[in-house]
Image 1 (cartoon, rainbow, N blue to C red):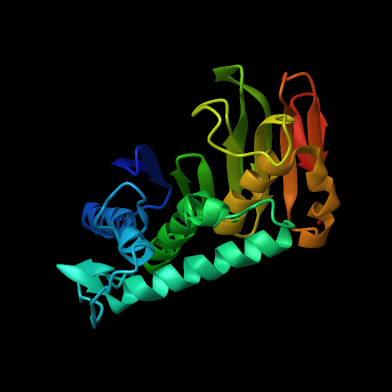
Image 2 (spheres, one colour; image 1 turned 90 degrees about the vertical axis):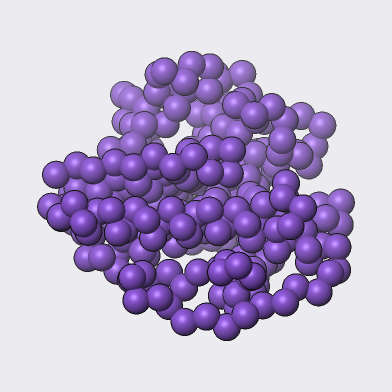
Length: 274
């Protein structure tokens, strides 16, 4: 039975879809838990909220935190906010910061959450949140699910892969191709929807969009941003990520498709390594 919830948050929409046969009560419980988490992520990581944990730390203000145990009505999530920020918010902040540092190192600096000496993890945190929602769903015993956090996708499969379209940057109503993903994550970055919000390391944009697949939506989100930032130079570091990671990048004029660990033939992407 297909159930879908769309939640408006972070100036985008997060879609939670499950295919399991569960009760209405279970469905509402997991939605409520996921939604609370998503909005708490905004309170912790938003660069646009003056009172976010991120901005308080950036202004070097003291951020008091309180201890909190997991409420009985929640399966997995220990809230980041309960009137004040909790110790779980501080832990999440440290985890995301460490992931940003790892992504910067892995991409030879193409991903940089500290650009212009201002820390902004937005290029990784949406994917990290998608991963976390998947963990919430697993705590409810869900075996087949799809979470799309504004283009950052994390999956649970029960053996049957999810078919995912790679959007055509020139026409959002069409796809340049499809792929079947049996788990993990798939994240897309590009300047074609939101303007030039990703700073490139050259004076040109080699790609209009970049899609990265791999075991973690958090890192796939960061690596997709890095591919846009580095352009064709991403081939210098992508092999170092290992065979679990794949790239599908569309040239700036949409005339060419560049791939790593994916093969494109007749509108279908297939994995070229395992």
